[in-house]
Image (tube, rainbow, N blue to C red; front, top):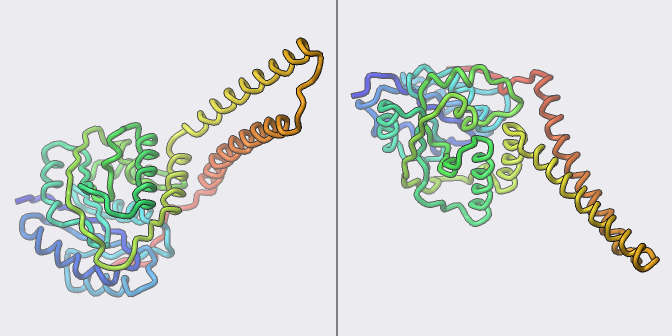
Amino acid sequence: MNAELVSIVIPVYNSSDTLVRLVSELEEKLRPAIHYELVCVDDNSSDDSWKIISTLAANHACVKGIRLCRNYGQHNALLCGILRSSGKIIITMDDDGQHPASAIPKMVYYITKGADVVYSFPKEEKQGFLRDLASRLIKFTLSSAMGQMNARHVSAFRAFRSDAKTAFDQYRGAGVNIDVILTWAATSYKFIPVEFRERSSGQSGYTPIKLVRHSINMMTGFTTRPLKLASYMGFVIALMGAVVLFYVLLIWLTMGSSVPGFTFIASIVIIFSGAQLLALGIIGEYLARIHLGAMGRPPYLIRETI
């Protein structure tokens, strides 16, 4: 029996159809083996999710409800729930019923045995070609931001020690990514393959386009590699320009004429202009993040708690 309190943090968005079932499953699979609290963070849902959370909190002493002022996003809602959790071990999981509660005892076990972070990842991705492709892009970007290739097994179903809350509490960035912040306080990782279930209702809010956008935000928010890429690209383009200049001079010296052709000149202009715009765009992303950070905008605001 685990005497330590375990905090299960769930970001909730339009999940009125799954919340009651999820709470019942947690109670069935975890009690009495694990002493836990359930922190449900309503990310300004447009359905009856908050009303259901209120009812669950009234009927279950272990349920704590937090309602945000507006929709801030999954990772911001998780940050809110993590900072307001009380357990020595923190579990995060989705609200759609895909993450099986039966995997939680094993995750808690590995944490008690010394792992700093434990991830349960799906044995097989079943989200469609475009969604799987976007997910791979996210994990590739996460590998770059985290500096670890094992980021390909990262998922939203994670467990970690409450000691890592220090890193979350001190975070003041414009964007939030739980997995990257965890790397600032963790060194030991454990990855568990789990059979994830199909969504019981509704559709995921993460479309391929949103995942790509999230990948770009994560890359520019937690690593300087895009800036280095822009520097390398500038060097390569300058080298190409030198080669073209050498070619033009060689033609003029050997043949006594200039290089003919509008297409040739237009191609060179397009290459150089495109490279400059791309580099400016990358620099602009970083400047925008500096601007947002200087504004001191909070990652979330709480409307009410239960």
